[in-house]
Amino acid sequence: MHLRRICCAAAMGLLLVPAARAQSRWYVSGSLGTYFRENESGPEGITNHVVTGPGTATDTFDPGLLANLAVGYRLGAGLRLEAEAGYAQYQTATTNPQSAFFPPLKGQQFTRETGGGHTILMGTLNLFYDLPVPGRFVPYIGGGLGGAHTETQHSRFLDASGNGFLEGGGESTRGVALVEGGLNIALGAHAALVPAYRYLHFFGLSSSRGDEVAHIAKIGLRYSF
Image (cartoon, rainbow, N blue to C red):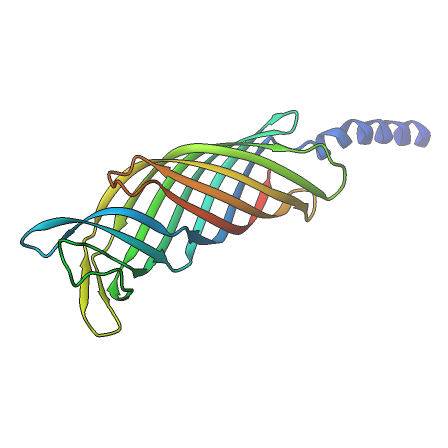
């Protein structure tokens, strides 16, 4: 009688083991990173609030902050699909305007005094591939496409002589593409630490100075259900 009960308990235990180990394909993740926008140079219309003339300018930017939240689904064969929402904020640091139309602007550097903030809201659909590497450390690569809305503050700059220069603000909605590579570091059955590098490219700017490019160094935490 006791032997029968032991056998039944063992059989039930074997049936329950796969269920206990089974893991949902779904996961959530969040990450924080540093946003490095590349310098921007090219033609620019320069105005003194009365007339506008042709010119060129080079802008530099201070490092900013990036935060992301995502919901993901494992498709199988190492592929993961993610819907991600992101937020980024950074500031213009300097500008070097030059214009024959406005002789005082000879390419000298103006440093931001006030304003110059950029805020970006992004939404992307990403596809990642986890390389077939055994162990706790699994590298991955991938990319994504989506859209972004940017709000830019008006800026006031000063040169070394105390002369002022103003840049206008505004809003824009653009397309965005990303490429990312990183490392999944397993912390247990359900959690992973994820350091990564991300390249961002924004499209559809109305400015003739070209598309915006940024580099991201970030670290995230992923939880699988």
